[in-house]
Length: 368
Image: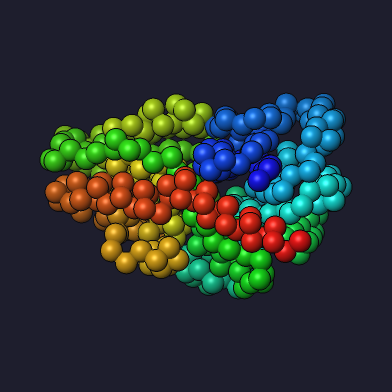
């Protein structure tokens, strides 16, 4: 197959491309590298600052459109797959739809269905937008609701979701938002990770326990990193000889991975049910994730035995309690590390995931 992957979130498309290429497919990744994270891509469409940057990007994208034709599959990372307003995407989307066989929409992150569902129906006990039946009112949640509800972004997302051939959800949370509305075209496929064949766990835990926290630029409160970081700092202060805290703040992915290497625990995504790309990358290296490991996460992938994620409720108290439990009983770390490696190899290996995408794409192509 000839496949075009447009846009990037946390290395999902580039890792998927590597898997699909291994299976013999021709794949092109077009993205801005997910901003400062600077993930690899075949064609760069990053935007420079200011109005001139927007105009330059628009000219570049239009000049590239002739290259974005005659693909079997075009997959969009999000309804906003380029760095300009929703209104400008309509014409580009229609062009892609006309000149390629099948269009797939990724349900991988922030979009109308995620914001709307979590803010109104609230099928999740907690999310980026609700805690129980209470709406979150932090700055980022308010901004995203304003951006996506009753706006051109909503109109674009609804149009593409209705019109596209298939929708792929990468996390349980996103599947819950799309599947009830688009049962016939929505599928769940786990995120792809290049697993480490040589990943191994030492036979004995060593002190200090190394805790890693990655802070996303301007998204700390929204993702709950502020709460997790405070809990980790308090634990470090309480156990100065047993705990070592390392913090990465808004750095490129290559540096992030380098800083993360050798850690024992990673704190990530307080309001998530499931581990996303960064904690999965950490788990593939034998780093234990403290974050989203709700029962629904294991159910959707059919995992009945492994429970490598230290699940926390979206509160400081829960984070602090779980960290304290691990620090005072470090013997469990080695088991959780080994399970983390096995879990990612079993469910997220990029070749396995690429085969699931391949099967989904072939199913869509049969509908011609």
